[in-house]
Amino acid sequence: MRALPRHVPSSLELHGVRWLRSSYSTGANNCVETARPVTPDRSGLLAVRDSKDPAGPALLFSPESWAEFTAAVERI
Image 1 (cartoon, rainbow, N blue to C red):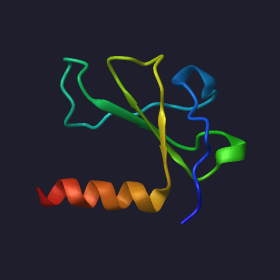
Image 2 (image 1 turned 90 degrees about the horizontal axis):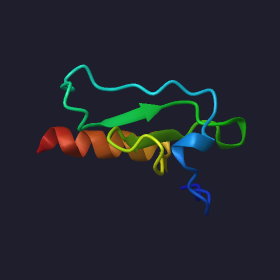
Image 3 (image 1 turned 30 degrees about the horizontal axis):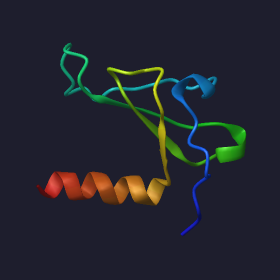
């Protein structure tokens, strides 16, 4: 498994990304948003942020880690 960067960029540092929300999301603005690709130097990683804090930090996940996470959530 490849190591993630030590610095997790804030959402404002992620230029040129289009943030997406689930179609199951409500208008209450209480969901997570995802974006891909993050930046050229972090290609392939998925960015995830809290929709209530769009200027806050964005967590970065490898495609494999994100797939494992979403599969685990679906099993709950």
